Image 1 (cartoon, helix red, strand yellow):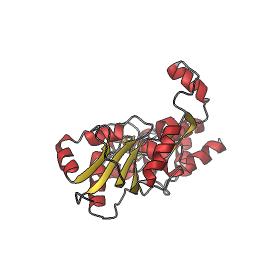
Image 2 (spheres, rainbow, N blue to C red; image 1 turned 135 degrees about the vertical axis):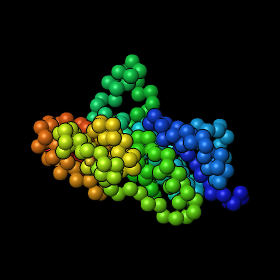
Image 3 (cartoon, rainbow, N blue to C red; image 1 turned 180 degrees about the vertical axis):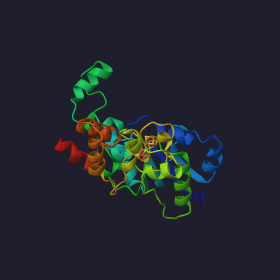
Image 4 (cartoon, rainbow, N blue to C red; image 1 turned 90 degrees about the vertical axis):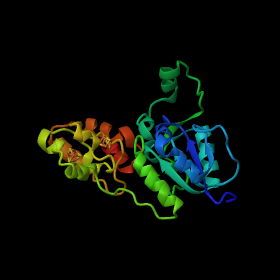
Length: 258
Ligand code: SF4
Ligand code: SF4
């Protein structure tokens, strides 16, 4: 580290670029953030790309094209820690809910051509399905305060902590009446990882799980049964669950069962 600073790169695969935009949206903190790291690559912020290995690579987007596949392997080979940011990188994102549809039909619907112009792989994979991922920061997009805390922890060489409780906990903290219990709504708060401060239930909108399931903790079957008891159809619930996290293995199991 010639500068004595930690070398950091920000990278984007297939997605809407919302996570990197959210980082760029921290105008009041950007000078401080960029001043404390050696910024190696962040194409959305600067066309200057420094060659060489990085200490921390933040990667958003899913592995959807041949180029994504080559890029994520190159990033992994050239970084010490790889951090997946956002649901596309962690769960395949919204685009993964289209898995199984004919790529030619998708190209036709969007670009009016059947040519596989982007060298689409036919699936939208999470980073962890391709390479080793060290940390995952959920969200669609990520929360700015969570990113800042994660960056500070990594720069200080502290092992970061991630939320391991559901959105329901944040409902209770804010004393929001439960939408399932009080109104019979299909709220996905019980299986969704907290961190958004129950943003949607606060406005009486059910959680659609934009932060994805609580990894290794979510009781998807329990949530499913609870919603069925409230009169929801199984396929509707499964469709809701796979909207942001289609690559989540428990959801795949449920989908196969339907
Ligand atoms: S409204 Fe949703 S998130 Fe809030 S407590 Fe009820 S189920 Fe949980
Ligand atoms: S959909 Fe759920 S996780 Fe996403 S912001 Fe709303 S309450 Fe939070």
